[in-house]
Length: 184
Image (cartoon, rainbow, N blue to C red; front, side, top):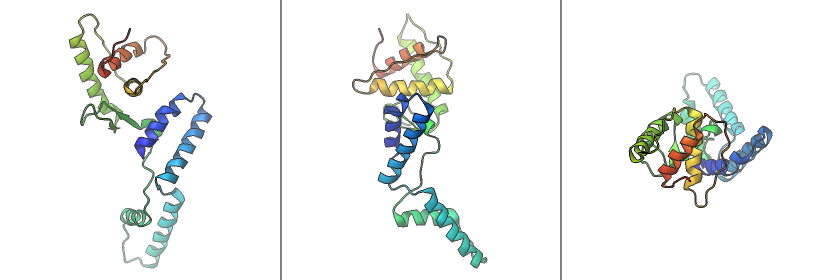
């Protein structure tokens, strides 16, 4: 489900500029995911927790493990909790620490920096004319993940507009090199 969420977010959500459009899109995307992927609503969880609390008040000697009971409840009704805490930090990429080249979920953006640095040193070793010196920061790493996703997609294209000095030209060269393309 998180892969579907990510692909919708990257394909459509990244094109939205206005914050109210983005909020509308995220709300509708979550609604679709909850409907079609059997995700339990917060109201159902609260009702279940309330019933457990009432039972535990009636019988104080018996301890209730809320997490275990909630897990059992979700299994009984065939649903699971909403797994996405922050939509801005949901990324899948070919760059990952586990198996580079496979399209997998990125757990932490900070972990991608080591993969980017390996690709950067590979680029610098293979290219005698141009040497890239990138200072990595979270926003640049996120942008590079998005660029890599677009460039590796069939017929992928990207319009990138930024102020001079943010390192996006160098990032584009690195991403293109990693994907096996050349920039002209």
